[in-house]
Amino acid sequence: MKYRSVFDIIGPVMIGPSSSHTAGAARIGRMARQLFGRIPREARIEFCGSFAQTYQGHGTDVALVGGIMNFDTHDPRIKDALKIAEDIGLDVKITTIDLQGEHPNTAWISLIDDAGTLKVKGISVGGGKIAMLEAGGFAMNLSGDSWTTLVFHKDHFGMIASVARVLADHRINIARMEMSRKAKGQEALLIIETDQVILDSIGTQIAGIANVAHVRILPPL
Image (tube, rainbow, N blue to C red; front, side, top):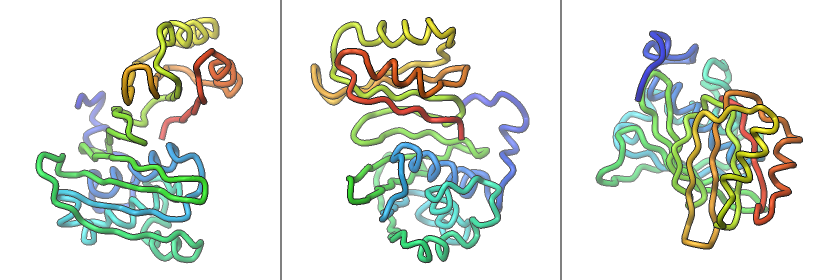
């Protein structure tokens, strides 16, 4: 993990006590909510490693649940997140698991409603920085620091070139791109981080490309 400034090391403005266990957890929760795309009815959270050992004392539980409710790292409501979740009917269950080889600050989150379930894996890497490593069975590495376009499509030749052409036509600079697929010729996910805002109209244009199932646009956290 490369830090761009001293403020990345100090961490974000936040409700304490820990940038990695609290601010990072809140950002993981917010990214999970963004990926889910709607208000969940249930949240199943599994903490690993250091998260599992200290989540109550360090406020990792309330921070992550607050993030799922879209609270920012500095939102004073974070400290009451479990009570707020109960009040709005969000059913939260928190457990711990012992998985060898996982990052010390790992959380598995399943968000559930009547329309479906999304399971994601996020890690807190320090200074409030995170990485989302898996969502819906797709491997990824999302930081939440940039505008991100998710293109769900059938694995097919020419997809990267077609999407890149749309972005180039709108003078959008690609900062990073990665491809994930479940199997050759089956479901695939193209992840594009950009330096500029991605408008909904651009997402609609990308969604019109042959073999694209749907497009999601995520703003920076």
